[in-house]
Length: 144
Image (tube, rainbow, N blue to C red):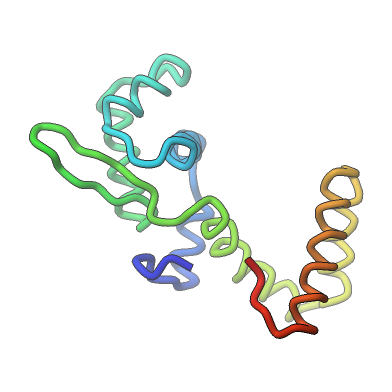
């Protein structure tokens, strides 16, 4: 996990509470890497029907949540996700799964598998992941 991000349950809950605009901005940053505010606006502004200042406010909110970093270069600010998409997902999922498994491990796992079974592609991914974890556990390697 990215060490710049200070993990805590509160951070995970704040990150989980991404609004639609925040989620769209994060998706754009994950897809493109570092972008200027103008580049993010060019990619999302018309599509989302938002003003440039609104987008900058969303970026600042993502900075305050610890999800985006900003660097200045002259007049322009450049924004970059602190966590990868996978790190973000793991960070948000961890406290949720921990709490659900503490309440009822069997029900929590059954609900997860049931959800995965609704889509054959997701079910195949789950099967492959289980096989990979079993191999890792036997060899002592970490999951990538």
